[in-house]
Image 1 (cartoon, rainbow, N blue to C red):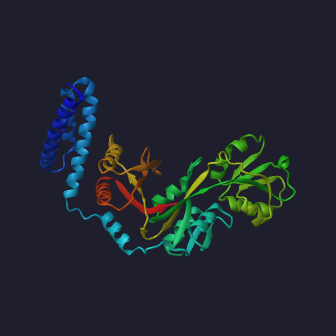
Image 2: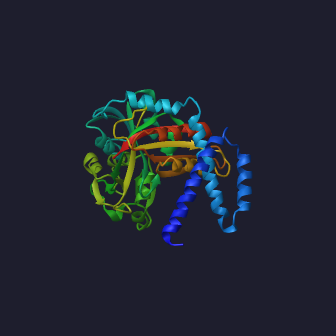
Image 3: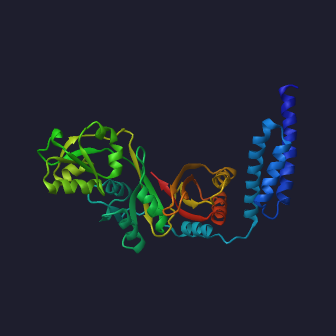
Length: 368
């Protein structure tokens, strides 16, 4: 057979498959149980040629997921997340506010403050000693928005923020990625050879690990915030202590720069999220974030990923975090592309809302 004849036969098979698929979807009522699925997979894999058995399992597992999704779409489930999306889209203003009361962790000169300055012009910033203070300020209504760091390109996630995201009810309304450059600061008159102790936030310490490892005999001390460390260094008067902070903190707190750009890589970015108590979906929103707790059994994560694939939704982040106090139980954080709030997206979120042990919609927003 030549290529045209082969293609013609394949087209014919595809036509038959389509008719059989449509008929199967009609018959697949009610939702198929997992025990029957296992029996079907076992029977079909036994019948298949050995070299194709693995592909048969993948094919029919995907078919089961598509069938389940179709059946859910035909049901009249009263979806809370669908209502939330519709209400937020209907009641959010046409443009993101340029001025607002914003909660940040740290003091003036913190990297979170730099993120605020990019998001708002200007922001009425209230500073808190902890990330939890930011979440509490938003939760109580003291501040309309809060800005916190979520992850860094070289040092990874800010684990404390992920834990707080699970404990507080909030929504992401915007996010921004900022290039981060670190500077070693000390009191005027201090010299690099005199430094015995370095203070900074654990993320900044990790981002500057190579510089610190090359510096033998220096004590590394973690603190709550890079700018807070700079402010404390200025008031301490110590000439044997230094801090890792932003270059702006040198001028703010009267410190001297001992070394510039000490981060591990020039391509060092931190992603900050802007949170609010109520869901707000502004025009241009193109990303959706979720937290899910999945059933502790084989295939749970696969079924979630299969839903995204079946509906043509691109996932650009998946990260797991242990659930405090529970052995080997994890929460899964997802970022997915959502150029529009489509019916497909609403359908997938509705299914996840019904099928997962815990479902938390974190927001649909624009990232800069």
